[in-house]
Amino acid sequence: MQVGTGPGALEVSLKPISFRWRTPVLALDFRMLSQRQRALVWAALGLIAIWGLSFAGYKIAANLKMTAEKVRAYIASVDLSRLSAADRARTLKALADKLNRLSREERQQLRLGRFGEGWFEQMTESEKSAFLEATMPAGFKQMISAFEELPEDKRRKTIDDALKRLRDVSANAAGGAVGMPGGANRPPISPELEAQIRTIGLKTFYSQSSAQTKAELAPVLEELQRAMESGRMMRGR
Image (cartoon, rainbow, N blue to C red; front, top):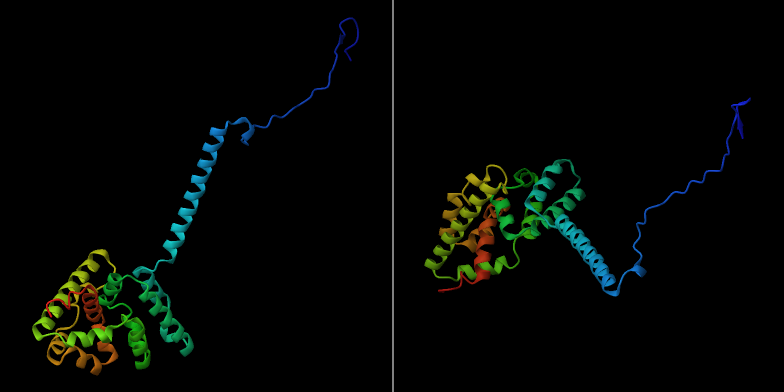
């Protein structure tokens, strides 16, 4: 190709320019690895897969585990007074299921904190009775009968020990903010209720009590149940 005219014209030769993109090699060519290197790569991939599955399992378990905070959030999210009878029954059953999935200590702390007092006040007597029946520990009625057969001094000491431990649980709830606000400053049960238990007897008093009183007594019954299961209540009989 000639550029310009006259004596100073230049002859320029143009050639086609070829562009070639080079893509970095990201894939691992196993054919270039020795048998030992392949084994190490597979082991590393296996560890990564196991770690990933373990982490996923941990997250799933954490989401499924019931906690006192989740129970309180559930109570705060529902206005029981606005529900129909059928919805109330389903909601109360769901709350009972959540409460039963808690650890014994978390359940005691919630009860000592008087959790869901607003709900309980709105329940009918039949709803209260059904809720208490669903959330009391299995075999608690047999526990009450066994308790009544103990000598008087043993019954007195067992109640003293149960109330002392519940006071400790309530103090722990105050530090960890597990129970409802204000609950940690209250005694496990009222002095009047404690006096009636000691005077009338646990079995007679429970059978004659209202659902409201049984709800207040629930932490004590659960603690007595724990003592029976551990064998402490039966020793020295």
